[in-house]
Length: 152
Length: 191
Image 1 (cartoon, rainbow over the protein chains, first blue to last red):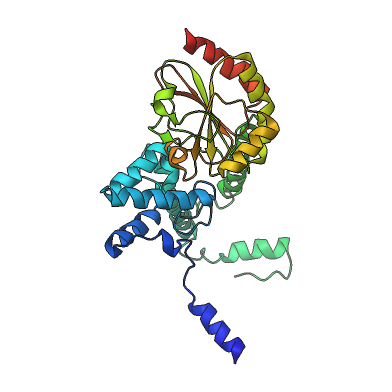
Image 2 (image 1 turned 180 degrees about the vertical axis):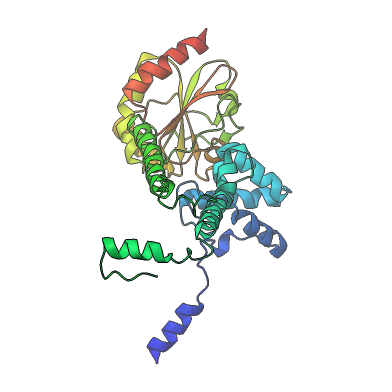
């Protein structure tokens, strides 16, 4: 029974967030904005984790800083722009759409197009009809070359 | 493929060439990246966007017994080096002898930012290893750190007379980098 309960809890356990209660802002609306911003920012020491989820100390410091900025009246875009101005586009978890990321954004579609082309060529390449049956002369010639061979 | 029925014996080469071409292309990419890494490129280092921009505004409290507060105003008028360190930072101990030599030579002031550290631990570390810093500011909450786009200690920034960031070292300053890259830059910026 205990095991079952544990399994149920594990199945329904939400993602664990690194945000500690004492980090949170008093105003729920501002806190919600802070969470929204921090979920778009990439932790600078852990490659593929948001600063919202990361336990890294620098991620916590960035969470505190963005909350301080939101309290001071910055918009979400201002906060993100500030961190991008310090750490570059690296801090954006979702890469921006620009010349250097075109390959990233279009890559899957290019691969899909190549795949579609290959499939198209293969389907087109199959002969639509079976070749014409052999004439009696051809059958005779074949019988002479390979006696007993079955012919279509 | 319209000629398929008339010349069925013609071999189709591209299904065999394509995988080979893909493997060769990937191999080329991997070889390039690996040679970059052996040439000193570190994929964990985030390229800095701060070069040629002014150092961010900061006003850091002093370390008791080690002079006044460290502010952005200190960076004006002289080429200087900002060094991020902490008593918890093992790599900083490795870098430290070079900083001591630079300080001794009087080549340029080194400003230390004691990152996320207890003041007594910073002081104990400096007493044990020696103090290369002209001035030290404490940054327990990473304000100047985030302003400088720092990821991990140690990191160092070469600042020109106008307070503009001219060079960044992520990690330990090696003697080679100091001699071949930073010293010529200091000479140029000091003109």
